[in-house]
Image (tube, rainbow, N blue to C red; front, side, top):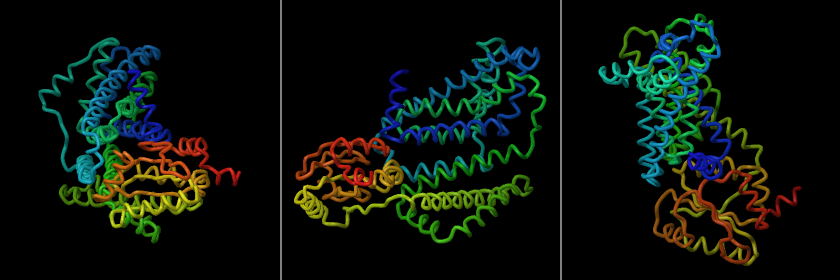
Amino acid sequence: MFEELHSGQQLLQQALGQQQLIIASLSSFIAGLLSAFSPCVYPLIPITLGVMQGVGVSGNAWRGLRLCLAYVAGMVLLFCVLGIVSASAGMLLGAALQHPWLLCAMAAFFFLMACSLLGAFELSLPIWLSQILSQVGGAGYWGAFLMGLVAGVLAAPCSGPVLAVILSLVAQQADRGVGIVLMSSYALGLGLPFLLLGTFSYAASKLPKSGPWMVCVKHVLAICILCVAIYYLQLGIPLLADELEMIALSNPLPIAAVALMMAALVVWNTTWRRARVALFVRVISATTLAVALWLAGIWAQQLQQRSHTRLQWHTIAQQDAVLQRAQQLLATAQQAKQPVIISFSARWCAACRMFERTTLSNSRVARALQHVMRIKVDLTLDHPDLRRLKQRYDVHAVPTTLLLQPGSNHVLERVSGFMPPGQLLRLLRQFGFDRGLHHHE
């Protein structure tokens, strides 16, 4: 277990960064909480609390809390095991999870999971298995623990699509520590209503009745999953990412109008009688709303980045005379005894885009790199010269960042994976690359 948690801590520096892991954990928690209010889980809350003896009957809050903690512990154990298995599978696949075709396949998978939440089809367990699992549990803490252990499986028709999306993301990160963190967050979100209602027995009578509002919860989850699908689709198809960014920056007012209209359609179709027509309109309107939300996010991000210091980088790509251009840039830096930073990246690489948007756009990083030769090697499209350049600098994955000694081509530091701004600044200070930062300070 210590090794798994240590692996999760390493990801803070190498894969997502601390802020991104916190956001991912919070998102998983909210997804679990919303799943608890879905039509497949919400009606089971009072039934489950009633089965656990003493909860909601005796009024003993301390006993109720302990029983519900045992119940939630069972859910946490189940989901953590699933997270470890999913991350282990991702580690076996390795770099294959970064290929454009697989990113597009993941986007298609997420779209299908969203369609499931919108009513296109249902993920359900065999009847015989549901009957067996429903009989697991009983009185006392051990019984509550066993009930929690199977609760996530019984909720598969509604929570299954959300769970599948989170497990897919864990598999792509291929880190068991992150699998434990994200899946624990999801389990805690799913179990929070049980903890509150089991501890305060009077609250169970205040629960709102089941109704169409629970279907709206499923639709909210579906829209969130559609946004994830768009994220992976634009990573797999860089041209799509450029088009979305151009649309987002052209005029934000139509985007807001479309988002509001599509949101109204999604809500309206929760009770539409003509099932097939309603399903078609729901899928189209929810997808359009997700695209509008994605464009709004790009627009907001661009507004935030306008205040940051932006530096121009010398880009080497497939269409260039790769080796000749690299030699010219390095020769120029060597004559000027200028330090060099080389960033190997690709448009289909999620960590690369995050590195550019969060680290290289940081104002302090940009000031520190003002007097540094900045070279970006774009590996989006394969080319023999690009492969030779990778071999020359022993680059096996993206993103990879190299710091070269002033006046020579000697590599001082090599970092593979995502680097938060603080880590890059420490390296620049360590090797004396940060003259621009000292000048401003």
